[in-house]
Image 1 (cartoon, helix red, strand yellow):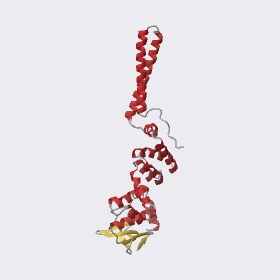
Image 2 (cartoon, rainbow, N blue to C red):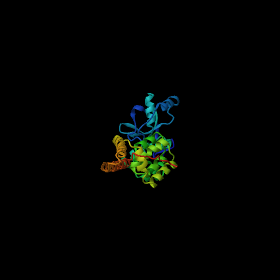
Image 3 (spheres, one colour):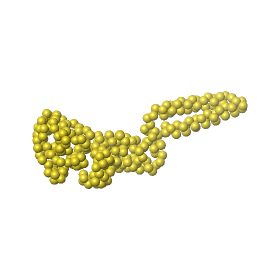
Image 4 (cartoon, rainbow, N blue to C red):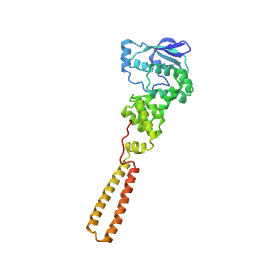
Length: 297
């Protein structure tokens, strides 16, 4: 059994050798999509040497990295010609498992990178079930399934997880919401740096008050220019109709004895009131009037 930096990488004993860096290629199934900045690592290797040999396996045209893609690239930056490597015999599945375990133990993956790596193992590569993956990496089945579920969250929430602007435990609370609400509540969560308890209070209120979405959330986040044009048009119509009412009232006060004129004007007055009422109802229907503020207390 070979253990490199605490990671069991193969049931076979690996061989430690110096290998020309030109013969080593990066992993064909990398766990990390972005290697991040290598400057600090390169500086450390330059000053102290490569303290932890990378793990490689034999491939047809040389060697392929199993664990240590970042170290390999940092050594290339420094122009190093040969590096110490543990050579192991692993198939694709074993190599991916070894790389995944190393990254988890080193805590180099953000929650979304981890979720994508888990999903690749189960779905893209078809290496095994969630339970098998959980057993391989020493995590619970629920941990793995919850991580993968993060990939169903909207992009703004996933980006916040990558940038560490929210935590997986907070983001997971959003999974209980309909997809249409996740992005909008996610914006609130990110902006407020909300805790799990605060998010739960908001979600509880959303579920208890069915009209919260209609009264607060949707209008607050409306960005459609057409709706704003409708609002402005309705406001102009309301102003014009109210002005008409004022002028009719002035005429009524001036011709109190002309009952025929007064009756005609009163009919018009009632009709204008009905139009005003209908416009106000339309404005309410568009969620553009008297928007209350959502509280979390």
